[in-house]
Length: 291
Image (cartoon, rainbow, N blue to C red; front, side, top):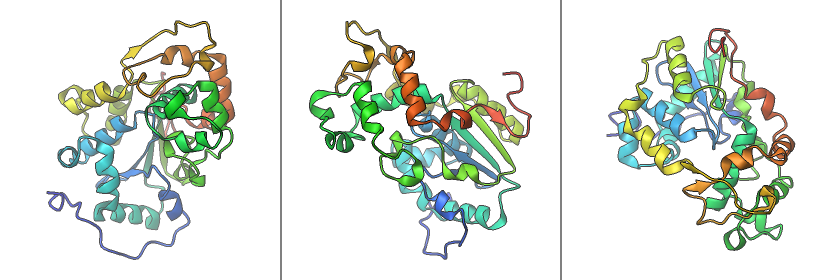
């Protein structure tokens, strides 16, 4: 099935000697359209699963991805990036320059993303090791926002440093510095994600997606996102409340935490350069002009 889709495993080929090749190896690696000169860059905890699913749908790979595994990132990391198609498109981009290419960046508010990262670090062991090195046992005792911040302050959160799990890193990806002819930034906390993607599709001459016609998007929302926001019934400062691994899957006080002055201060400390680079924008000046 994968071979028929042009995703047969890549054989060893000579890699291009290009200054941007290493940038393309930094996780999460970008997605490259097979027929259009379009690159998609995304970050964990910025609707990445939704964006990856959208890309596979546009590339007619969604059926193959679903067949391979229900979670789209498994197909992305274990099949797509190792395919001849991906390497061929990446090499073409690097060899011929980027002036005729468009970069789509899907981003989000760093403050809201920080709260999403905290929940993910409670649910999954992405920060357990670095926390243990600082005397914090997340699995046993849970994790507060303040503790999480103190842990993250001790490590390099740039993607290129590759010191920590990619979920914890800044949104800024090295390929953002490549001289693309056009860069479209869609911040999902500023623009409706589906509406924004539809606007981008129209601008780039792509078929417009009817998201309601594809149940995979609803499946991702139901399984991965916080569907039950909650208040904190406690006298503790919210930033000091510990959250445990089995408590945050379906309910989490994301709004309370997002509105804390402490959360904003922490996000500016941890991700100071993100704020200016994740704002909704179109360098061509065509999209988002009235927003």
